[in-house]
Image (cartoon, rainbow, N blue to C red):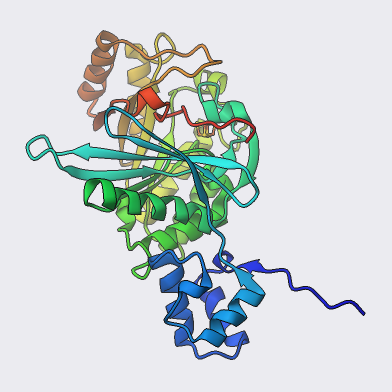
Length: 364
Ligand code: SF4
């Protein structure tokens, strides 16, 4: 009979509990699971040989039965404003992008906030008409380890480049995070774990097109303590059903139209006690009129919220353009008069196509 070959599995497919069970199965003492977790996620070990805290026999056994899944940097671009865009290759050979966005203090010139925009899928099935990722279609979900590793890698880069680690993470890169719910929520547990990156949950934001059922699940999981109390942002981009359905196909289903979204958002704010943020790309002549601002204010009043207006970056293959300064200021005035909390996000990393809606890789 031919010898049975063991297919090495990815140790980073296991969460804390999974690692504990694996360590017990091997007949090793329980404290080894905590050590392994710390080295895999806190120190970013990619090779069992480097985990010197473990006895040699244990490292050899690990190498026999498992491997440590990693992502590989294949390209780095730096924009004139300091934004860094990374292209990573996954174990499948497919590629994703993530962006590190520094915010500098006006007086000292030092980075005061370092935000990572992370990808949760290769491509995206949502097909929003203004988005480069949407044009790619869906190719693959990322694992919790692959999501975590984007942030870990950029944290190391941030420390080297800016003398400070990552302060904020936003799930606004490639993909619809709530469509990859299990992996994304597992990644939020890793990101906020004190033995890993230890980020504050309030500095981690999941951004969704508005998958109503999943928003409710997220709220319930946060309330039950199964998911850290991360923040929620909704990519709204249009304040009425006809307008939204025209540019975001997800809105065409009654399970995910504005009425469903309203119910879900109200459930979320009631259950978690947190407000939501509405992301709104202001497009020229599509959603930038005073009437649109009044309709947006109506949405903002569904529950405790704020509105984040985004200056859109044109994407090749689409007909969308950004609104002008005059229309933007008029739009903001209406919102402020309506009592809406509003912020404006200027584009970052435009010269390297790292801005919102611009992330896409060829061939998935
Ligand atoms: Fe997907 Fe977000 Fe792009 Fe819509 S905007 S297609 S949800 S990545």
